[in-house]
Length: 134
Ligand SMILES: [Zn+2]
Image (tube, rainbow, N blue to C red):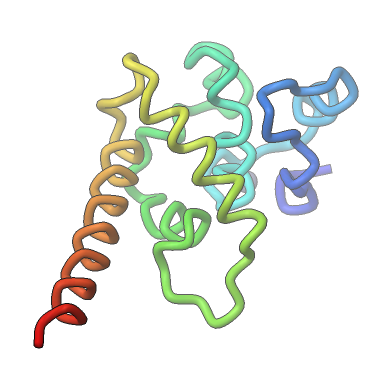
């Protein structure tokens, strides 16, 4: 199996990665640079160290600036007529956990995520402001 056939929806969101999923992830061929790999990476990272993650994926994917677009799609920042709401909720939950991990706060994609969240919030607040204006 390779990363394109793997659906990280099966990874539980509560940080308990069951013993039958881990061998599957270890054995599968991972390119380490596609949206499927990034999704799997984000789902696993909160409960694993950078060292373990790099061993699994061959790279620290949270440092890959070229994956900003993929992250935008996973986190729901990109306009999409058919958003995958379940995946978006799962990714945001994990990215929030990762953002709060001291040693990961400076990583390229974590910073990008936080900035995008702030931008969304700002947009919402502006919209609210204009709606309130007489
Ligand atoms: Zn891949």
